[in-house]
Image 1 (cartoon, rainbow, N blue to C red):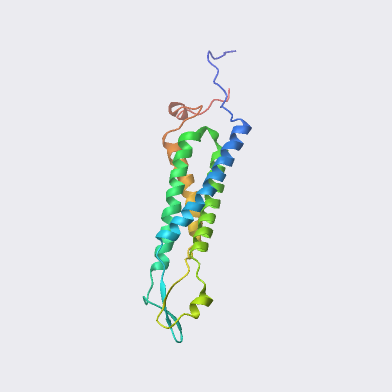
Image 2: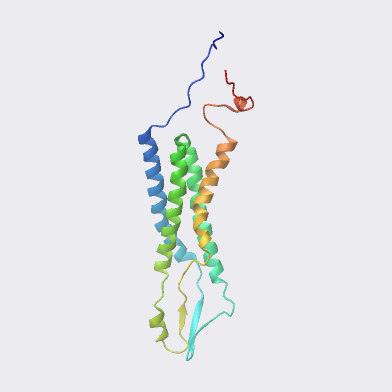
Length: 186
């Protein structure tokens, strides 16, 4: 019987407590980042305007593009948070494995949803009060997210920002040279 001189070490296991901490920090941190993202979205996103007429409100611009622009701003803001969170998490907690990936997915989703809620709440308009304004008054249209698929941009980009460096710069018990050889069963 041939015994190897060097026995490969077992893959490092992440302690359950550390994994849970990473998960909680990521979910809590990304969710909390939804608040400033929502405020920033409210501040930078353009909104369409209505001019009050005697027979109702009409858009000042006959083809308002502000709805698309506000969705684009939401995608840019949440996408930037997702990319930064994914890269930072890979850099600082890449050994945490599944808990970090799950934290990025859940936290990114919760953060995007909170940002949407905060921005929509800040950009709300009392349309009943606007209907009572004098003719010729300008009223902002409520800020809303028309493209609900934008809510998955943050978690998807966070996961992408985790996966790409992980594939390009593998770090773990198997080195790049060992990956080319199939594992032996004996």
